[in-house]
Length: 176
Image 1 (cartoon, one colour):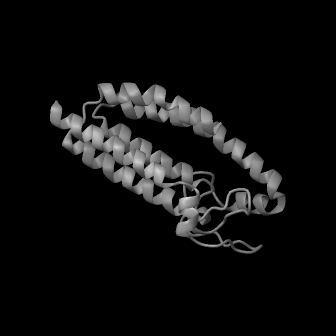
Image 2: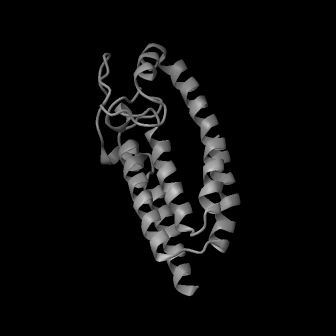
């Protein structure tokens, strides 16, 4: 599913970059949302140990899918920076179609790997929208954020992609 997500997004990105009409205000609002998304994704990537343990600390204490929440804010920010209502609409449709299936598949996978712990965790922590207070695991707590884990999960790629997108949109706003 990850490969499909990464390839399908280019069907939207190329027309978006061609037809986008960014304004300074749209760029500013979009950059703020994307920065929030990058922060959430970075914190998440530096905390998670995929398939090794059930991560329930850090951002995972608030939502089961903080990486996808961060991606949502990045995508919404970039699409808003495009300067027309059609881009956020297309993004929301794409995001809903792709990530709803991804989230269900991931929940099934984690249920198989960590049946008891995941059942308890899923009963307490929302799928997407964060809870107000952090979840406290009854069966041990996972490690916190580590820069080495952030690098290992290659999260710098999301930052590079967002910077490139906003750089192209900013340049386009100067040309138009």
